[in-house]
Length: 117
Image 1 (tube, rainbow, N blue to C red):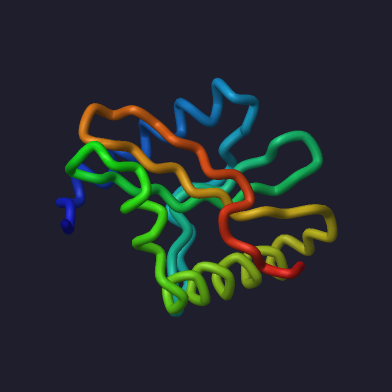
Image 2: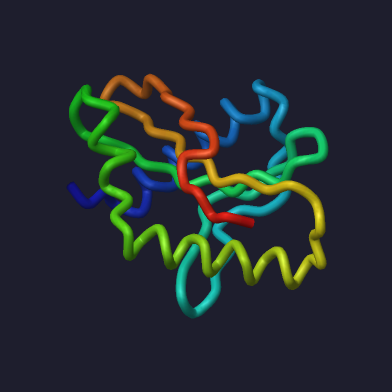
């Protein structure tokens, strides 16, 4: 299901608040390059965290994470690499997925997309 921009922005705000409570300081939102966009970028200690946010219209979490197909993963990783180069980041980094279900329950999948950095 494709969500409207308003629903997507609300989901991203909910995810951001959740991450902040978990100790992830969000430093960028909707980072865009011609080949993709990353919803949220944060820092958790010494780790840079890239986050893809998914909102599902029904109660199953799995659909949100599984909806990130190989092509989408490649675009996300390429965009993350551009950010790392732009910021001259040499530390640890990971790619997480936040899935919100129909009741706004959150599942946080840490290191969900493997980059091989």
